Length: 435
Ligand code: DLL
Image 1 (spheres, rainbow, N blue to C red):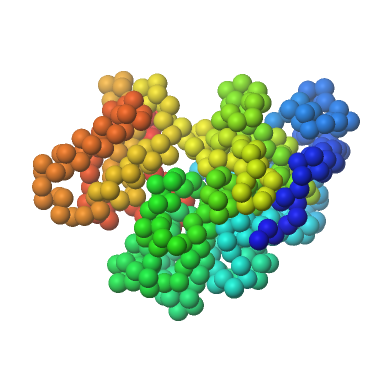
Image 2: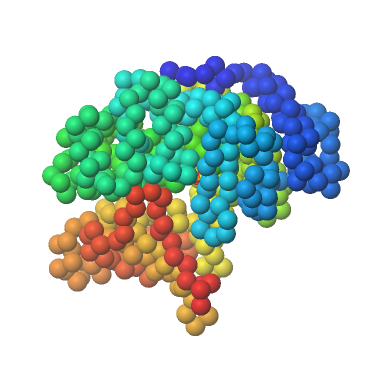
């Protein structure tokens, strides 16, 4: 099923719609937000200069700093009295970025999340358990409203209290799980410890995962834990843009369909800001073309991906974004080599003797960058054989060297000894800037 006809418009028709909405949005921010007007004037741009989608590239970028500089409501195009919801993304440093929604924005958000749920195989028959933390994070309420709109029975269990989550899952016969991939792994592990096999003793058949990346080996791990016939998809979004609802995978699992009638994507070279030709990998930049309260123009997401315009077998015509390689600000530079944590995860998870939990610790010793990777064994028995541990250590070291071109110090640790996460995982600690 395709939820909205806009998901399968012929491209010419879609682009016509995008252009009309883009023009309206640019005029709106120019007229209503001094910070936008000043930036556009500095670049010699007026709303009437936007006459085609090609002209988008002449508009100035917006980035997180603009939101912070105008904290909390300075980039909003409506008075506070028009807002019906406020969320914030909690950055680790500095002020959070604040986002707001008018009543119309909430309606659109709900519809777009319903599209994402349908992409992942959800129907009104589902009992959906939302295991994202409720609060200022957009994930929980976003999925909540979208799934309710579809007609599913939504259980707002939030994150944490994992044993109780599993009790509800069993008693309510939950069929659909919303969580970060890390938390979904943790839930399955706790269930096993309770003597419940998620694949056979629970009824969860759909996993709508998001809020952080899920590599292909991690998806494979989900099938192993939750059962081969689980529909495992991921979806992408960002508070500043709306929250979840920007894009999601269909069951073909060939990238995430962007809701292009509401968001125009571009891929740029993060270093120069140049728009890259179709098919190139770079930083995703998104322009919101239907938001009322906070329509961001050319927002630099820092997320690294590629856009795929080839038709998808599912029948939707919207462009797909490849599963993210990571964020440009997550990229580690180790002895001059660019390393994304997702590359490390891909290698680790292909090794059957170790589980999906790992920690990367980067440091500098004697002016040289070092990288230690702690990985958990799946099975205690290996701990009894020094020779087998050595052999495994060498294997992982060698595989990482092939992919990264770097020597990493591998530390094999006992099963269940690394930290678990109920929301987004934090797997990298970079100690270099602390000393
Ligand atoms: O994570 C919105 C969301 C919630 C999307 C739930 C999907 C499901 P923020 O907290 O603002 O918003 O974090 C946004 O999370 O820039 C990405 O770096 C990362 N991210 C979100 N979804 C994915 C994904 C929500 N599927 C930041 N794959 C984004 C990889 C993701 N990274």
